[in-house]
Image (tube, rainbow, N blue to C red; front, side, top):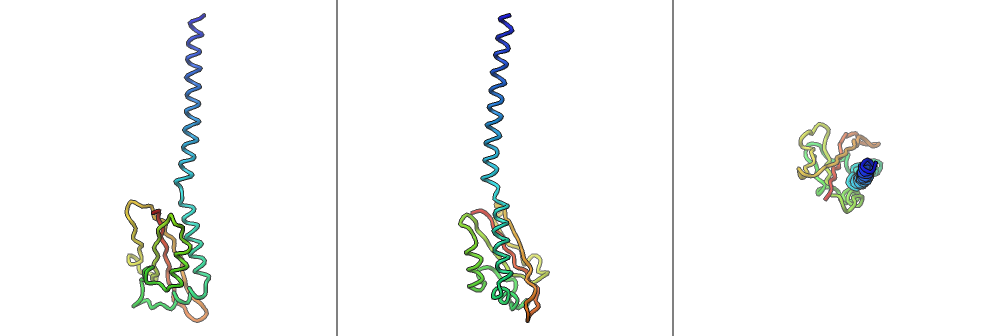
Length: 146
């Protein structure tokens, strides 16, 4: 009878250690996922910046008045000061972003170049017209972690 009791104790200890290890691994994995998954937050920030530009009359007018043949595609560094400031003030310190204004159908000329090892989150918005001007243009914003 004593022999069987010893094996049962060993089995109980093994199961207890297995349960403690499993719970610890699940807790660590959840914490790791919550810290590393910033994609939803980045996309929300990008959408907020783009929507603010899309509804601002001055920004819309500046974008719509750009000449497709000579001025587009336009890099962030060459944007109007007000538009560049709107974009840069909405970007948190842990992100690096770039933006481009392109004509529809520019294809490769409208790509935002990032470092290959970074996860880039790119959103775009179509600015089509205001009361006086119809000139469909794309504003792209791409962000990645520093």
